[in-house]
Each structure stands twice: as structure tokens, then as C-alpha cells.
Amino acid sequence: MSLLVVGLSHRSAPVSVLERASLAADSQAKLLQDTLAAEPATEAAVLATCNRIELYADVDKFHAGVAELSTLLAQHSGVGLDELTPYLYVHYEDRAVHHLFSVACGLDSMVVGEGQILGQIKDALALGQELHTAGRLLNDLFQQALRVGKRAHSETGIDRAGQSLVTFGLEQLAEGGDVTGWAGGKRALVIGAGSMSSLAAATLARTGVAEIVVANRTRARADRLVEILGQSGTAARAVEMAAVPGELTRADVVVSCTGATGLVLTAEAVADALGVALDTAAEAPAAPLATTAELDQHAAWVENGAAARDRAVPRATVPAQNPGPVRLALLDLAMPRDIDGAAHRVDGVRLVDIESLAEASADAPMAADVDQVRTIVADEVAAFGAAQRAAHITPTVVALRTMAADVVAGELVRLDGRLPDLDEKQRAEITQTVRRVVDKLLHAPTVRVKQLASEPGGAGYADALRELFDLDPQTVAAVSRADLNDPNRGRS
Image (cartoon, rainbow, N blue to C red; front, top):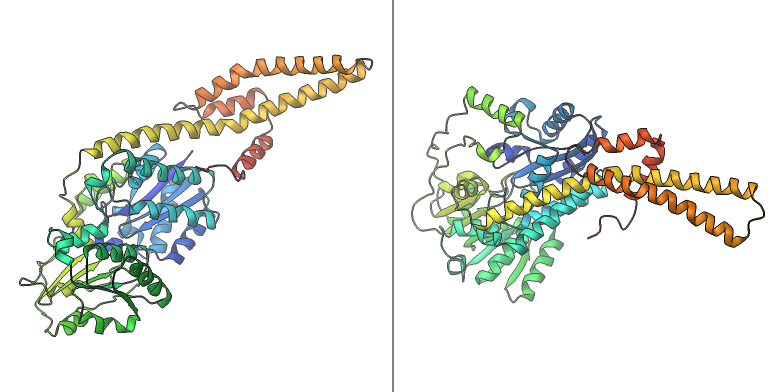
């Protein structure tokens, strides 16, 4: 196993960089295909969410793999390699497994314990399977990550440590208060009809809003979401995107999460909807850029595989929200952003976006259950590593037993030629005896070699077994391919 992950997230990079590096669906597919075409990689999967972009690959060379994956991320994200590199983190083999399992459990999420990441991991695996870029290693890894995440949520109280990003965002709009009491009776406008927007609409419905209006570029998806909301008794209707400015004048709460590459709502549009003038006062000065020494230190941490969470990335200063009563609450969950950040300067507007959510969640208290989840992750990482190492030697053991069976069959044919007068009972007894002897001779060493191979540093036992018994590498490879193509393999 030579698992490598190169990526950046809200813990390692400012939102402004994440926003520019975000990958559309077609870009993700091209990234996977180009990664597989690169010499160091034999498998690839990409996990791209609103606050992380990670490229997973099975590589045969570590340093060449890091260089290639970093270059590919830069090429497909549109952020120059020199600019992107200081924010990248690298994990290898067991550390990479530990990272993905932690992500699946919500330990690395902006809101600790949120469960939406499981759906995003499932989507990442599905894309890799669809494009045939996820092979044995990444199929096993991502399927196990999903099981570990589900185990963490079912066996611990990690859900109490945090909520979904939607709920957390709505709570920030309510200035930390009860969402139900704050949103009840209000009119809500949801822009987008994807998974995040659907979750936002469902969350708003539970708060008792008076009406939910859904706007989406594809009207059929908006109609479907409205139908689902209606089944729960919530007043809802779908509109075209062109109707958003008019709906904005009637809304109390707006949640936007689309795949648009440009702004969906400008500050001017928000100001027009409220009938107020846009404050054109100068923005507060940005925080100073990271010093050369800080970037050098970060590069050293990346090289050594240190956790990105231990580094605080300098961020631009976020100006204070406009004082006074809130007439329109805006929640932007998109990456890149849907709503112009300057909308916070419109009188009567409160804006919460990914960047402000990151700031708000930085000081959130960790639940005691987090320690229990970390224990689960550590145990699962050890078990996964042992299973992968044991699986690595299994084709060699199968090839050895196949060779032994062929030897037995050949010798029995020769025996038939030398002793043609044996009756069926004698021939069957001899056949059973010879096979029993071979099985007994092979049983102890094959069981023991599997045990040894499952331990750290046990990867060399497969090579030793092939060398000692002069096994044909093509036979071993054929066993591996047959196992990988088994339709029942990997099903939970």
C-alpha cells in the first residue's frame, strides 16, 4: 500500500484561496483522468467540498507522487503552484488513512461532528468508480471510511459536538440563539436545489417558516424540492432564477448554495431589494500577509506531515456587520461564494458566509465524545492497515496452493501410468492421502506468513514467498485481478 493524499482545507488555507481553488464536477473528472495518466499514480479519487479539496492516489514513489499531485491540483484549480504550495498538506500511508477516517467522522470538519461529509465521501467514491480510477486500495479505503464514520455517529455522541454546516450557519444568523424561535413565521428564499440547499430548506421547514421559495437554474429540480417540502406540510413554491430579485424584496432569510462560478447576488441587488443605498465606505484594512519565515515554517510542516490544524493561517480582517435591526439575513454556503461580501455593508443586512463560519467555529468547544471518536479512528486505522497488508500476501498464498495442487495432479497422472491396475477405491485413497500431506505441509507456514504479513513491516513476506517457491509473477497477478473483479468483493 502506497496511499498518498495531497490537499488543502479550511484548516490550512484562507477561504479566499479555497474559493479560487474550488473544482466543478467536470474539472474533478478531468483531474482524476489526468492523475491516472501520470506516471506515479495507479489509482485516484478526489474529495471536493465547500471547505476542502483533496486528491488521493496509490503511488509507487512518494516524492514524485507529491510533486505530480501538487502540480495537477494547481493546474486544475487555476491557482498557481507557487501560491498553492504553502497551503497544501501531505499525508502518506497510515497517516493518509487516519486523515480520511477523521474526516469521515467529522473531526476535521468546520463544524465538528457534522454528518454531511459522509455523503460527500460517498459521492467521491462513486465518481472514482464511474471513471474507473478507484481500484482495490481506494475502493477499500473509502468504503471503510464510510463504515468508520457511521460507527462514530452510532456509538458516540459526536453529533452533540456540532451540527450540520446549515444549522450552524442559521444559528450564526440568529446570533447564536435558537434557530426555531428566530426563523419561525419568516419567509425564506433558497437559491439552489442541490444537497446543501435541500438540507437548508428542510432545516428551515422544521423551524416553522411561513413560506419557502426555491430558485434554481434547472426548474425541474426546484419543483422536486418543493414537492418534498409540501409533503411535510410546508408552504413552498418554485421560481426561475430570473425571479430572484423580486423574491428578494419579500424574503426575510436567504440561503444560497449553487455551483455558479460567479456571484448570484451582488451587493447592489441586495441594496435595491431593501430600497436603501449601498454604503461605499472603504473596507477595513486587510491583515498583513504571512511573513516569509511563517511560510517557510508551514512548508516544513507540510514536508513532515504535521497536522494542518496546528497552524493558524493569517486571514483577511472581516469587517463588522452593519449595526441596527436585521431586515434581511443572508447565508452563503457556496464555494466559490454566491453572495457579494460587500452585502454586509447594506443597512439592515446580516451576512454569514463560509469565511465567517470558519472564524465562528474556531473557538467552538470540543465535546468529550471527540476523544472516544479519536480512539475509534486509531483502532480502525490499525485494523485497516493489517487487513491491507494481509490482503497483499493472499494472492501469493493462493498461487502457492494452486502450484501445489498442480504438482499433486501431475504426480497422480504419472502414478496412474505406472500402476494401471489400481482399482477406483485404491486410487481415491492414494489421491486423498497425497492431498492431505500437501495440505498439512502448507497449512502452518501459510497461516503464519499471513499473520506476519499483517504486522507493520510485513510487506516483504510476499516477495520472500514468491522467491522461495519460484512462483510465476503473472500467476500471482492473475489471482489479484480475479479477486478485484469479484462482484461480491467489498460489499458491506
